[in-house]
Length: 327
Image 1 (cartoon, rainbow, N blue to C red):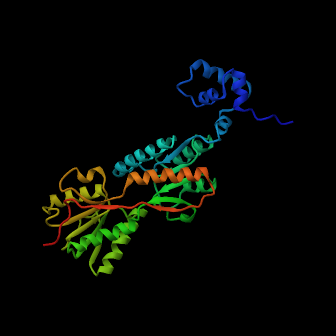
Image 2: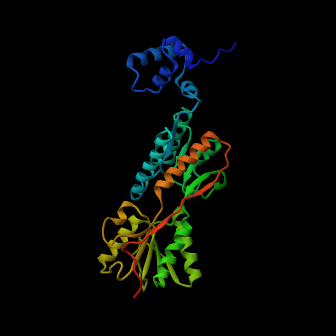
Image 3: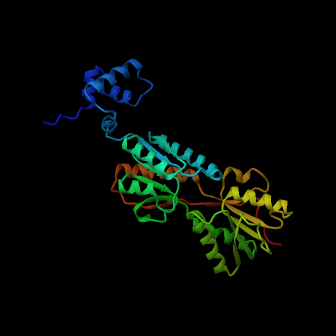
């Protein structure tokens, strides 16, 4: 004969407290005294009531928390982005009375084991994944387990099965080329420190297609090599941090921005207007990326059968000092 599942009410009765006190004690809430927590723990032990089923049975079986998965590598150069988007996610979660837990690790394996524990122990109801591109073990695990999640970025594989929130990076690359062409630049170069990742591919593809359609001269340069700038008058650089390094390098070579060469970049991070020349850069609206990703995730948690979609957040070009018209 199977025993009836022990509920929070049974534990409450046994401990002589009300059910909400039990659930708070389980969550180690600071408002509950150590003595009461001890009493609840004892009642749980007596009734063989595991903390896990406790978490599952709280309220609606929801933990009221979401997980944010940081990329497996410590990419220092992108830290302003992560700090800012985490702030936005926290803000929106707070509005919805939801807490945020972070999963981070140096490898996909470390990340996966954290994500697994967080979900299996019902510490979170779903995840926001702060990196995109090729599917990896983490994405595969989330998809296989039908766990609600939203990606910030553009997935390359299985994109149809995921909800993603991103800017249109290809359009941004095209608009960078268009803006420089409008200033009279004819020989342009796209500068990058990587040939990986969806952000690079999309931004470069947009740039390349626009250059071709305008009949201009465009090339791809890597910062790992010395930039061969024969007659190039404008650079489109993958992101602000790289742009600042590129401008420093040019200055050391006696090349002045924007007098000798124009530079346009992406992300509008805090660094964009820290040192002169202030960068002409695309603001990717990180606050909105963060807010929308939380809103979409909460939709999916409430209705797991909701259709998957791509949400595109608009960007805006901030014209500052690093670009000018060709004389």
